[in-house]
Length: 125
Figure 1: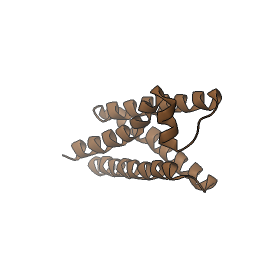
Figure 2: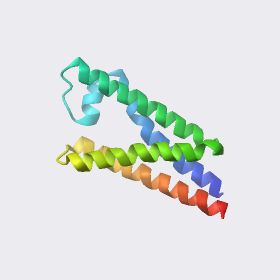
Figure 3: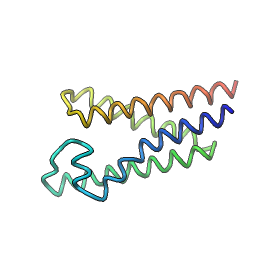
Figure 4: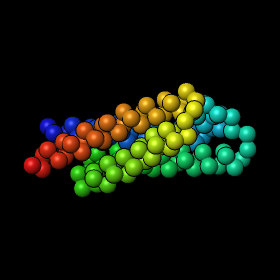
């Protein structure tokens, strides 16, 4: 039961990380997701690459939900990604509502990964 809950938390956090991948198909989706106007190809390339990397991270995390041996790595990779984004947003300050929504989603996913970590530690004891 505990392992199923751990896997569910990791999967859901992975899904949250995977969602930005769908923005890779359209600059309009990227602009809408981040609440910004992407006016040059350099920024477009960077943001599409970001979407691809989040897709990969999300896929890895969702796969790890079904592979216990991968779970510590998925928790670490996802946690580092989320904490760094939250920290960067905090340091930059004065960000728009779209970024605020991403920060909130990262807090939710980070809470899931924290719960998954706690469950994994609990089952080891």
